[in-house]
Image 1 (cartoon, rainbow, N blue to C red):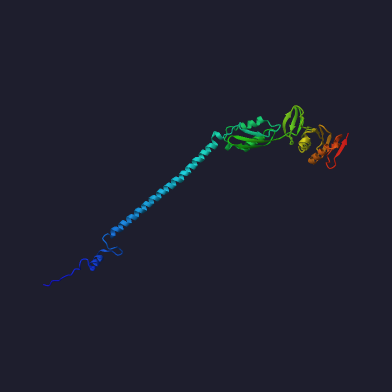
Image 2 (image 1 turned 90 degrees about the vertical axis):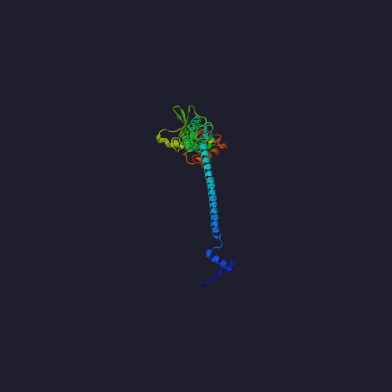
Length: 292
């Protein structure tokens, strides 16, 4: 019988190692018993780190979101509080006793102004319609214009432009005081000492005469106007008046009134006016003086 002897490589030899390597290793891996375990452990570590970073990112996003909406909520609360203070707080309500008013002139009744403003007592200053208040004030007799300004925290500053009378017209009850537009702003039982008395024909057909007289008085300087005692006119081109301490003045029409006033002022200050009976400035470039 034949016996076949098989020679095994020696343990530890290079050939044994090569054999073991060829039977256990996969392409692209390290030929050790722990290779696959090591690979699985590395993947788990990476996945854990990614999850930790995602959690940290979400936590940061939540904090940013909370801060952003917290600021918005705080801003909304501040706006609401400011709105309440401005619109509802009694600290910013109009107090009818906190009024700074000026410009009443000689004819505007302060009581009527107070009545208009008292209607807004307790109103929020922020919503007070000052333009509407101004319109109401101009409806008062003698008020030509009005300006209303808010004075925080609870007052108003009222500035009136009065319609001052320039003449007195005789009436059944005394005298009607009228402005340069013919508006009656007051009455007087006695003849006023600082306004000229106008005597002109009455009626619609004579309105132009009155308009011419009032135009002359309006364009006459105040110091000169106060010296006029009375004004008369039969037509709009024959206006004349008498000074309280001087002669009769022939004025003519309303045309060139500023120049006529200047010429008359110069003549009244000259020696020529001492004994003058009539001064004619109807033609201001050629004035004449008639002495008594």
